[in-house]
Length: 592
Figure 1 (cartoon, helix red, strand yellow):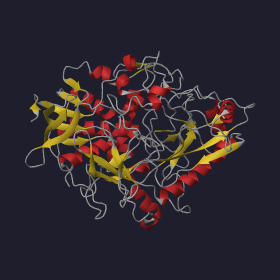
Figure 2 (figure 1 turned 90 degrees about the vertical axis):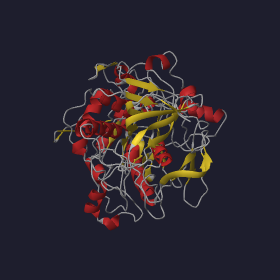
Figure 3 (figure 1 turned 180 degrees about the horizontal axis):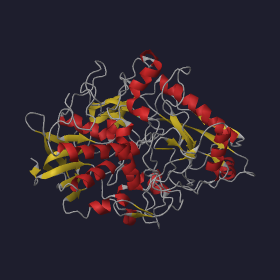
Figure 4 (figure 1 turned 45 degrees about the vertical axis):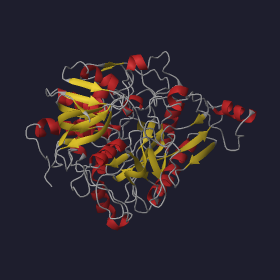
């Protein structure tokens, strides 16, 4: 029997970017908010001091900041006729663990989705015709537009002190920025970071090929910055230990550096770490959430009553909690009915490694930050004509070399021995003169009827709950897209002066052991039709109106950009709706 705790106005599940944003916004309304986080407390200065945080073995190889599969994992299969098996070590993606979530160890890539990304089904159908899309593709419009989200993108960028160059300022296209971006209401709060040699060489080659390169928008500070909450961040030192790592230098935007120091001072905010929520409780009607049940580290079960529940966990765990709580109809891929688990997506990424003459080129790859680089957007979204190509979707591409860390920075040309003195010599000779993009090609992954999440019928976690089962594979559309983009990217690397370019295409079947990104999206998607979406345009559950579901689980499909900027913009959009609409008249904000 769970022990019942005193009532709170709001309970938030997860304390990463979205949980922190919602907590900050709703405590400003005077509401009593508690956040419950599965992982441990993490703090920028004490957990990641610059005296020892640069430890590749600890953080990258041994996955210090991530969930251990022994805590919980997922089962995986490519197709429905296969037996799913548990993932025993993380490979293709890395589920985060602890306060700050993915915002603690992210690279800082702070993108806005294209305006067409939010109305994708409508846009592609109008341009190419419905028959152009693969028959089993299930893409949808978001139910919200870029113009509606623009003020919330802007707010997040100024919270983070994003470094970048505007390419479309109030409809005016500006040199040096991304000319394909949606119109922004004001410039980035900070100028772009200074670019190292390989990045500027990429930009020069891209420009000579007719493209319009621009600096990647970055949550790494190009200069000292004070955000709207009064929190101060320092300029990046280009240490090269950013992705997979926390930043004790206060140079990378994270919940720890941009929100939590303010939030923690509030008497109406509290948090509980190392506590795992096992279900969202609902009343007898099934239409109202009454709070959550969670288990602490001693195995004791607690009930936290609340008037409003905010689900702000990692995308797959959002889906798992909805399924375990019986909220929303589980997706059935055979009947193509139901909403929880539907439209799950990942990313389609690849690289083209450039090997240069070591006597002429020295790239010093160790001089880096998490989100530094020069990119092009000519092949993202629908910025190019897909008609003759036989696929839809695309991605940004760029020279975004984020580190030269010693354990993993060991690319060698084809034909090199795999071990021994020959391999060591090749590593030494190529370390400084090889271009290995951290991004390369970063492509979209559109949604399909047979790519989804459900509860595994066989495997359970340490609490006896079913694991989430992932059914996912690449489809022909994404394979074609990736081949086309990789070839285009390789042309630029060759034009930089590489003596040899090795293309590393993304191929089927989807390989759960080969890292891509942790950008897992969908499964509890937003939309305008409750028969094909779990939440409405304000991220409010269609079934339980006092439940709001944050994060990339809301994406009906994944675009060609990193998701964090859009995840945060949607969180601010939802918070605004809660503050200005829901609290004044609790109930559905959209009527089906």
